[in-house]
Length: 442
Ligand code: PA5
Image (cartoon, rainbow, N blue to C red; front, side):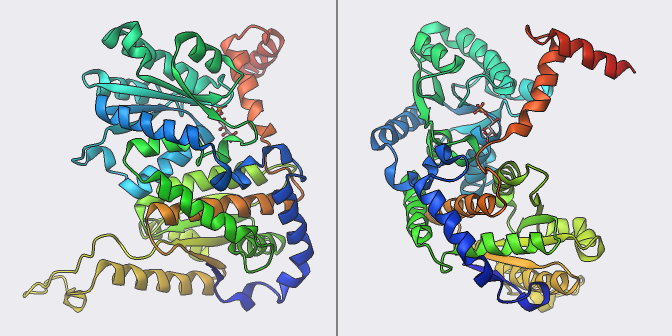
């Protein structure tokens, strides 16, 4: 569920009523695909309408990778990587690769242009059996395409052309693009990013599901959770938590808050916040509008960003994700000498201490002028995460429509690409190259 702590301090009531007609319209547009960018609303019914045959192939490929590989290299950027990384970190731990386990390590590359980062993973997999999942909807994104060259070369060196082809899985457009043509020509197994689903809404397609399934996470439970939330969100009323969240953040935006900080008290959630930042930042940040999505990891950031949040410019609000009980309960040991004065906590569980810190922070930040929205998840399993993913996606679609922007395009990400291509000397960019080089030497 979604709550706004101390509502009256921050927003005039009843803000919901004034917004209801607009929420209803946004909801209907999402449900019917008739709003801005409606051709990219395939994710709305995906948890129920997904391709079962492909889902079975994903599970079979995951089993094969588990049986013949000690590592899976996942190559992708933005929406082609953050969801899988978020779910794996959250459900398997950020230390997944360091743990003793039966399933392969998972390395994410192609999400930047650092030669060191790439070399490090090349070294890590050089002497182990590995497979590659190259993920790119367009099939032409520079970062993953460049990384893929290196890993393909390494695979071919290790296994020869034929065997290496059985270790490459390409997730891309079902019919178009350079990666699709290459995969068909080389005979690699392919999975589809549906035409009507953009990158940042694609975690519940093969884009996210194959890497997630390789770690042994129950992807059926993930989809079931998403389907449950899909049914909740299909109800066009203010009972929907997505309506409540979209309305709250929109009203806070209108009241002058410019930055939404997503926080969680579990470091395993860090990459879910990265996924959320892309989802909201890329969906809303256009036409000079939108909340700036930021993130914190509590309590670590209470000792750094906590200062700004408590006393800096009053343009922030926080959305705190409360996951619920930890998997393992730890109690603070008693120490007879009590040299650190901590015996008042002896026997207390870590969850108890965390929850008091959460409450104390909530009171301090909201009294300091930072509204707090609380999202209660109720657990850290695949079903709960599936519910949360769909909730955030649906609220994001609604939020975009409340702002009157197209939540499914990203024209702004093209500008850097054009400059980069020009400066790298890509054919066709000659004029721009000269112009940019002149600017750089001004
Ligand atoms: O949300 C988006 O559309 C982007 O983040 C893309 O996912 C990202 O740029 C990668 O694109 P592609 O999958 O085409 O390589």
